[in-house]
Image 1 (spheres, rainbow, N blue to C red):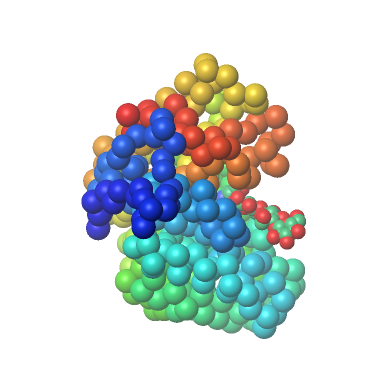
Image 2 (image 1 turned 120 degrees about the vertical axis):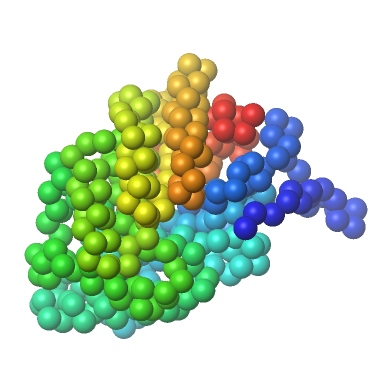
Length: 332
Ligand code: G3I
């Protein structure tokens, strides 16, 4: 449920935080009835008051960027570290924000000890992992990215250690385990390059249809939406949202960013703004597009430059936390 704008100015004569002069008067989270989120890192939340203030003002969902991944929570068998995830969930509760859990089963950031397990043991360990994590945050995580990036670009299944050892059926299993651990959480399949209609999004569509028919408790499709202005806006985005929502599931934009060749200039920022705007407008056009989450909100912290050298500036706010043209395209 959405809340009304709370003005933050001065408390007992001390300025808590003031929006940058150019910021819109109504925060993003208050211009729609959908959840508006950002990926966050526990360390920035703890150490950067300005980061925390903008997050608190503008968003009402948080997705831990790395803190809930298997490699973070159990890097060594039996040695758990929930500190980052706990801190983010605590922040969310204190500030009345929802949490998107990210992610239970992913081939990346997977500890070596998991990958090395024989099939029978892997199945038990996978079930324990899923159920332990979901139970820990039962009632505190609104939606989970249960499986992440299980398809190749051509629509075939990615050949992960889970598929090799457990077969494709592991996907239905993990949804059932997660549902048993928290029946109220909405359970998603999540992937990138599935914004438009293409072989990969066809495969996601077909799988969701099959799983629903079989009674597997899948409740949503997460569309990551890592875009680049170099490759054009995804074709048939709205047609894809239409067919997915017709399956009776929710859709969420889960990791939106729009990277540009650096350095940014006015024309590039304009194109970026139009991409963000089209992503946003498309989501708002469908009642069952329930969430619009960006993968970080400030160019100060973004995964993009490290992975795509020569590209960056992919977020709605610049390094100094000033809203960019893309922000004002969404929230004029
Ligand atoms: O925390 C360690 C630190 O202790 C160590 O010194 C350092 C040395 O490399 O690594 C740190 O971990 C890094 C972690 O981010 C936290 O900063 C990992 O190396 C790095 O690989 C990891 O990258 C994350 C990436 O997923 C992992 O593949 C990115 O931050 C994160 O934004 C990115 O997020 C993914 C989504 O989960 C799924 N969709 C795509 C998206 C972008 O790649």
